[in-house]
Image 1 (tube, rainbow, N blue to C red):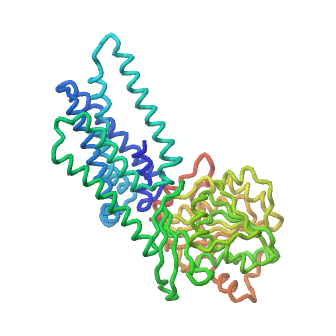
Image 2: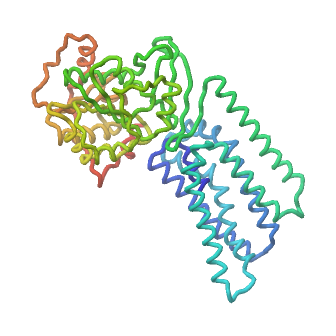
Image 3: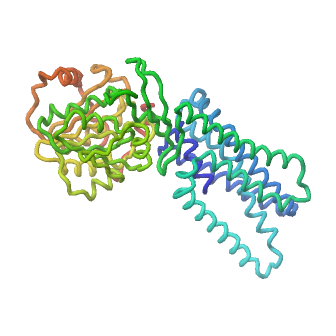
Length: 476
């Protein structure tokens, strides 16, 4: 189970954490274990010895090490070879995780056969071994999810698994402990030391690669192509979720500037809510731009917030309240009222929290808003064709609840075929806006309003039926 959970963190930065990726990972590992059980049982019937069991465990350590040394090379290469996300997830899971899972599956039936000295008590023996195995899986699940991964990160855990399996094999193969095993053991130690130095090197060049309880996070600096200024980025599971200028808190990403449509749709707002924090680029800019207003930010991952405080100048500010909670859980229980709700939880191209997309969630947002309140939501999608299904489904869902719903295209306002940042605005105000403003920035945003048709050809999203991952996959 530790290996499986770590596997999700290995795939996440390159393939995302969508339902497709989890399905592929779990399915391939379970399938490999099943084959392992079968062949392990057959091998135990043909030839039984402690040395063979030790050899199987030793080989499993070898293939865990193979995962460590090959994962980044393969996952960087695979999108160039396999464009389809589903197929890529399956193939990557087979290459990186199937061999080890197959070998570990062989261990159980082989160990059971070795332990069966008394056929009269064979049921008890088998039951005890499987109870111990299951208890170990439960322990591994909790310790890896609650402590190991957020504390040590994936690479150190893989090396720890490699070393642990190797050490387990030694008592079983002591008589045949040869130069190959000694070389392998030395290699694990050397790789561990090299990785420790590599991690230190990454920090020296301002590249942070770390794990939180929810995500794998990369933080690094680079020169912005548009401004030529130094920009710091936060990549969450290999997607750019936040950017800031190193020397100021102006907004880097164009779509975040569209949240300032707030002052057009609700000029006198005071209290606002935002879903999605990451590097807190917009909340910081909000605090500077609107000194008389407050913003509550719902960010599920406290580790992300800690990184934002350390690397993204996130201030301790009484007008900024941070709630570490799943957005839907917050919607379900809050009694607060807001003038505006900003949504930046749908910025992923690989995995979206579907529970925030449904009509049940939209109804709760509607009830949270004061009179004439509005939701301003960022979505990555096209408007037309198959790559726009998620946008059209979400648009129809908001349109069902809010009296007025509008759309702004950030990059190309008249190109419905392009996958881009789209800003959906849903307001409780029933009066049609003039679409004019003396504010030059707002006037520029208003010019990018989508005035074309939006086909209502996808069903409204519900808690029961929200095929968000399928829709997003078609936009890739």
